[in-house]
Image (tube, rainbow over all chains, first blue to last red; front, side, top):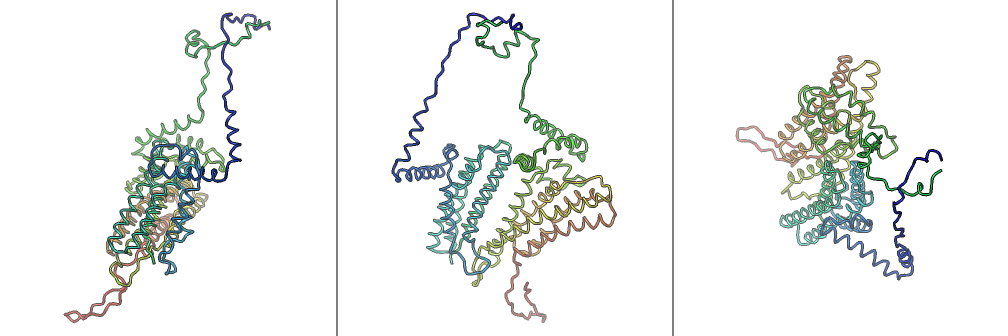
Length: 217
Length: 306
């Protein structure tokens, strides 16, 4: 090798280091062992995960647990229960009634998909299903508001009941919007945060409007 | 022939130290290629905004033309292609909304605010807001008008939301499509200096609908005069934005066709406003079968029913 004739490497550079393999061999054993566990354990694990996410929504801190392990069970349960509770209102008239079950379902899911697409198109770093998960879980305060409204409406439909419902729905609407904003706004570039928060505001406003205008037959 | 020592692994110093030792060595720096066009674009936008407040934006149109060609190069089946239509910041959206509400005479909305960066965020969300505002305001207004009448039972009228959505989105997308087709056809016959792309026309129409949002909220007031004054006022504002945008595109054409085009644009805009008012908002004086009251000076007074 004539070109290497004038390459000189100092003789006293020590060659040392460590070659270690990170110890990960234990976790595959744990995964395989879930096949043998009783069914109750499997179900309880998922239920606990869903319950933990509900707690995260009720007390929104900037934790990433909601974002990391997304699941859509909670949103599905909330959406179905909200749509069921919005039934039974003003079903007498052919056109001018409250929203039907399918309409509530479509509004919630289609609205959540559109907001997710919007935030991704604006350059957000959150994934599609993570965003759906957050938006769906943050419907929880509004579902609670719907429950309270139905109970209040059992007592009466006068002005006092309307004011109580207005206050409750307004407070829950603010809670939902703040909770979802706390999770979603961080994944946006800072000069576009308002562009992402506004559709979320509109989404929960529409759901709150549907809850507030519910009149039983 | 290399010795065994030559083949031993050698630690290399930090680039700064190496360069200090040998200042004449050639260096290669590799940057992220994606960052550069974006930074250039935003840097050119900033000074352009201040200088071109007085002009029609013809100075930097060359630069923006070049960069516009650079920007939208992704094929239409990729996600990045659609991201180029949402490349706006909060302040840009707010500026465009302000430009649609306060039209400055002589300034062209497209040249001044859009500048080859049409976005779909504004048109889409302004239309969505308008749909829900009209539905909610109509519902509220009807509630207040009929309040206190014993035969009235409040209904949320949820069906009207889907009707409102269909109407407004159809207006915001089909009318620009038709207008764009018409302008392209006229362009093939008469050489126009100013021509707009389809997305720019959609953008102008979308932002011009913004004025109807506060108008719809004020339509809750159950006074006929107030409502019609609001219609005329908002029509003047947004209509003038549309006229000032599209007049330069047709003025080189046959006089009658130019005037007819602009008149059609204004007519459709007015039709949308009046149609929404008529369909979603009940008339303030309602159809109670009123008795004919003989007034004291002998003339009969009939309560007007809609």
